[in-house]
Structures are given as structure tokens and as C-alpha cells.
Image (cartoon, rainbow, N blue to C red; front, side, top):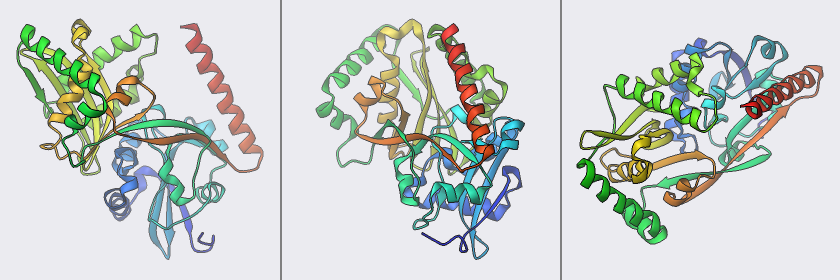
Length: 350
């Protein structure tokens, strides 16, 4: 590990990043394979900072040159006072970690010290963060579709998940017979109306499953709208739609980082659920992956069956808490425990 004297940490508001720092951060996301997630892009952190307060970045420097970036946020002004942080974007964000040059090594307590933090609560810390010396506690599986295999991906699935493939193809024939030819739009440039439709049906889906509507929170809806318009290389919104004839079947809003698509918010027309529109949407993404220059579709965390059926690779995320000794650390942990209890009680009362 580098000695503390070699690294310096400067914590600033995300909106105070210099143009040179954004360029350096962006370059790491493009050039270091482990960092090719749109959620680790500087443009994602800046998008969150544009719609909610208390978003910060610790800029790590060596010899006055930036070598790493740690984005984080404080949930409230009280958390900021306690120096108790969390990942940028909280539950909206599917990756968290240090964005840094390969070879840089430091432990969590040192990173907190450099960042001026007492506590950092996180989830979605990818296993590759071990390269920088960082780890978590509670593991969760994540599933990937690596599309750059020697054989065509759908052909590979025919060998590994034959039932998924045959059922999907059968349903595609059925829906085309009833409604008309399947029509897939990979990236809706006039995204406003399709996005409104997606969020409207997503709200119904949340209500049907007893969950609170994520997008009823103003800044979260504003974030998705801001990302839908974004076209940065390391963070670009991509809204896809699938129709059969003139009938809307399914939509998906995700984020791209180069050749990586993060599968984020899918939704489908419940009136046509018998045709498995979610499956048909995934098949359409696979079929169009070459023309979209996709090499990987990342399904994020969770053990949903469809993720396992259509994926050919897996990795591990970690949840955990990094903390330093001190009264503010204890108060920060207590505040988080109280919030978790209130959220659990609210969920049980629905």
C-alpha cells in the first residue's frame, strides 16, 4: 500500500469538480475494465447532484495529480454533521466503489480518513473493488450476459437454457399471430412520452406488489429524466420499446457505459402478460446487441429467475459499513439503525 504521505484527499461538492478532474475520472471509467459501469461515471454523480443536495466527492491525488475518486452523499444535513455517508443516489444506484488507477491500494479506514468521513453505509460494492483493498460483509449475487462469446448468444442459450429459449420463441410466434409483427426500437430519441408511459406502468407495478412508488419521490423521477437525456460515453440513457403491430408490449430504461448496458427499469403491458413480454424484450436486446455495439448486459443484483435463465456469468456484490472509531461514528450508526427500523415498520404496515 502507498504510505499516507503519498496520497492526499480533498473532499468537495460534486458540482465543484474541475473540468480536468471530470476528464481524469471519465478516462478511468473508459480505460479500466472493472470500472465500466454507468453508475461509477462522473456524469452519473453530477446528475444526482443536480437533483438533490449533499453530494460530494473525495478526490485522491498523488504529486498533485488525481489518481482516484470516491463519490458519496449525506442523506440529510444531520448525517452531514455526523459525517455519516452513503452511496450516491442511494437505492437508485446499482454500483458503488472507488474509481481509481490500477495498483492503488488502501483500506477502508484510510479511505474514510482521506475523505473526512466517520461512517459510510453501502451496498452494491462489486467484488472487483478488492483490487483497491476494499471489501464488504454481506454478499449478493449479480448476473451478467456476456455477449462477446465466440458463438451467437441466443444459440448459446439454446444449449444452456433450452426451455427459456423454446418458450420465448413460442410466445413470440403467438403474439405476432394475434397482434402483428414484433417491432423493437433500441434507443428512443424522442424519449419523453415513452418514459412517461414506462413510469406510469412502473407505478402500477409497484402498487400491485405492495411496494411504494420509487418515482413518487421528486428527485428520483427528476434523476431518471435527466439521465434519459444524457449522451455521455460513460453514462448514456437508453430507452427501448417493444411493440407487436401497434400494440405496446414492454419498455426498458437503462444506462450505458460504452459497450455495457445496465438493465435497470423494465416494465411490460399486463394485458399481454400471457406472452411473457419481459422475455421477448430481453430476446430483442440480444438480437440487436451487435448493431448497438453491446458486449455485456448487466442485470444488477438479485436472484430473480429470469436473470439466471438468460445469463451466462455471475459476480458478487457486497453490502457493509465502514467506520472509524469515535462518538460521531456511534451516532451515525444509531441514526442509520433508526432509519432502517422505520423503513421496515412502514413496509410491514402496507
